[in-house]
Length: 425
Image (cartoon, rainbow, N blue to C red; front, side, top):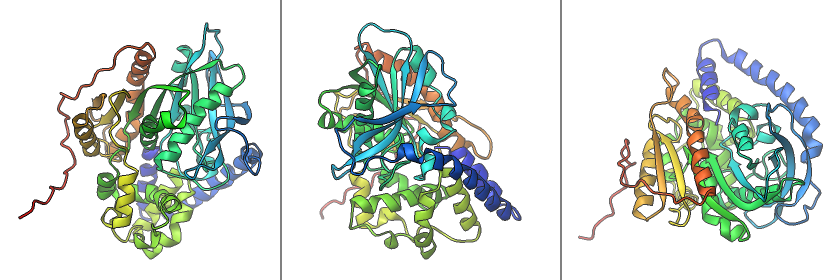
């Protein structure tokens, strides 16, 4: 997530006399972005209906704006599936090293964090992506094929499925299939997945469902930084915060598509009901800005904590990934000062996963920023601090080196409280 920029905008938007300027800035940026995105629309418009097999490439073209040596990047449109099993098109990127290699190349699949659901928010359509994914050059140097999904419905026609694990995993796995189908990639069947924030959720669900989706592929490990793993504890703490304004609308829009019993009117204020669809289709910066303006005027998005509404709480539990089995090595990086994906939720993940016997290594990081926005900056900086270790860890998995758990290490943050199980009298 680009949470730092969101909160910087929020601070400005909440200042007296700045609201009009903030709205003008949003309008100007949207006009420029819309013009750019309209030019890209024909590429991202798939045949109707989508036909083929998952991983088939519908079209591709060279990417610009990436200062990459020893590799070439391409924007792709490929076939994936939605949670119903229907074929859908997803955008994405593939980077292929230019240096010759003997044999097949290993593949690294990346799952991105929350960006907003509008077309301009899709990483393969965004000019911000070269900065947001700084590890591409390293992966080219190592000779790996790099593939990165946008997720179905993000930048392409049709409904999006934000934080729906089965859909995220389909998109990630099928991006690997697309990389294998890419002309001249020489991509093999062995791959690793890495992801940040929402993308950490996606990566872990990929670890859970990879063999079910694509038995022909060999996933050797999952690396996740600041992953959203314990959804009910996380939303229980963040629902009424400014973070909720930026992220909550995407949940309110996507989840009822999969869980028809969920009704946004059960958890949102009248203001929230009026605004959540528009906010969900904004990119994160604009959604945060507009939410901050509403908050500054004394309005709220949620009428009550979704974690306390039974139907929504059940969906949270359903979308919380279970501990991965010992056969799926996992690396989880978490900073103690993260104000978005709170450290106590991944401390709870360590407690649960270690008790379940998962082969998981936890990389606990300190405070990664200072100043009034340190908690938000720390969340964003977790990706940048973790990826060198993730790359090294992935290299070891590709080399068939044994992965070791560090479950004996006590996390520096106490786990989120688990309610006591009532005892019979």
